[in-house]
Length: 387
Ligand SMILES: *Cc1c(COP(=O)(O)O)cnc(C)c1O
Image (cartoon, rainbow, N blue to C red; front, side, top):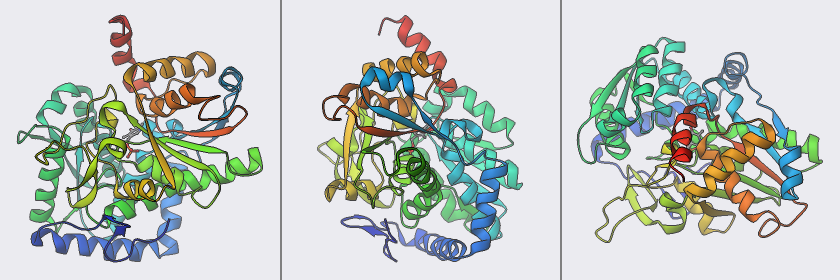
């Protein structure tokens, strides 16, 4: 997966569909990122923080008991073991370093479920940056504990009361704030979404997941696995993982929530400065994704996923809430790992297709993008409710 060039296009997707007022901010960021990413010192600093603070490299774990049950060889890339419990740290450390390099004292971010907000607040605390997180009013109520976490970390949470008062409105508000304060503020966007250079830059910061996993698979399997699986919300953990295997013969499979399957059910459209596949109604209004997993409640996917799907290099599947709950319990019981609900979607697809679409005996790598502590209370209620 290469450089999308100055226009930021991945085939028919991507680009920079922003009003004139946002163009200077995007251009300034692109220049700053390209300079930083060409600087070996920046890479050294990035990797050193991820090692000494973030806990990288994360291991690959072979799931012996679940593999026996499924008749495949299942490996997990353990992003759940990174600081703050998910892959999100890779991206926010990269962007915080860039903020510092640009000489800006402040970072803003959008958040839906609160996880990217918490990750951004974490990185801001580490770098001594001011941090404001935009969050829809509905989400602040659903995710009160994450609001408290962000405040503990020294961030200001700004409640967004426009539109549906959820993630897409928080993104709009953050973009507006960015334009108004770009002199001293960087917008730390949370996935491989938005206008160029974000989908490219966030992929590069998450590439470390795939690079590590590739070497770890070489050591364990003597080559790439047959199938590489990751869940897709916006698509950052998946694109980071895929980047390590795109040049191999491995099947690349992204798994979405059945209620938010933008790669499968979405139609090409423009939102938040990018062209991609989006869930839209007949009038072109963006639809809200519905899933038990707040982290996969994204009405669209990153443009590079839309492109990988269009050229047939990656496949996109979905899992229902019920399958996800089954996978969540199965991993806990057989391997002693409680996964986040997001990667439980990837596991649900693997469990459903082992011996079918995934031939018996296949080696399968799943990126376990996060740990399940945040989801335990919700799963308890769902299981008690007889689902
Ligand atoms: C946020 C999150 C996701 C979804 O984001 P992507 O950009 O699609 O990776 C997936 N898993 C976990 C654990 C998350 O926190």
